[in-house]
Amino acid sequence: VIVVGAGSGLEISSYAAEQGLGVAVVEQGPFGGTCLNRGCIPSKMLIHSADVAETIKQSHLFGITAKITKTEWNKIVNRANKFVDGEARQIEHGNKHTKNITVYKTTAKFTGHKLIQVGKETITADKIFIAAGTRPSIPQIKGLDKVRFITSDEALRLKKQPKDKAVLAIGTIEN
Image (cartoon, rainbow, N blue to C red; front, side):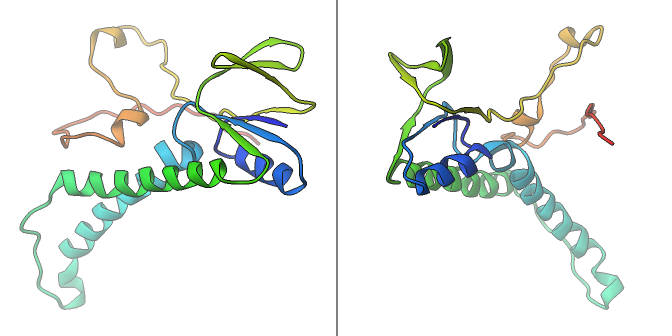
């Protein structure tokens, strides 16, 4: 089995390895997928800090007098990054040390029927799963190329808190 992507694809790779199958996991980036690295988990960790600050601001509603004397953006962001990066390393380490799994830290490129180039090597398998996840899509908006913008990938790792921002979110809704 070959699994391209180390997010939700790890469900497939771990099950296949448990069944005694040889598994190749191909992932150039950090393990854990979109949710861990640039989605659900880091965003919720950052939002939690904002929620704590809001609770302190509203503490008078609970008969408590409190005030925020300082917020440290770098500590807030670094806390989330340290957790996310540590989890990604642990997941990768676990895969590298799991029987029947071989990890390829590179990109995958189909070169023929059931043939995938990983680095300088070509691998093959009966079953190949593409679980490469999602990436931000830059919309075609007139003038966007003339302004500095960031995607959600960069937004979760900003070194400096922005003074102002505009958010453009586009998604699909399925029924």
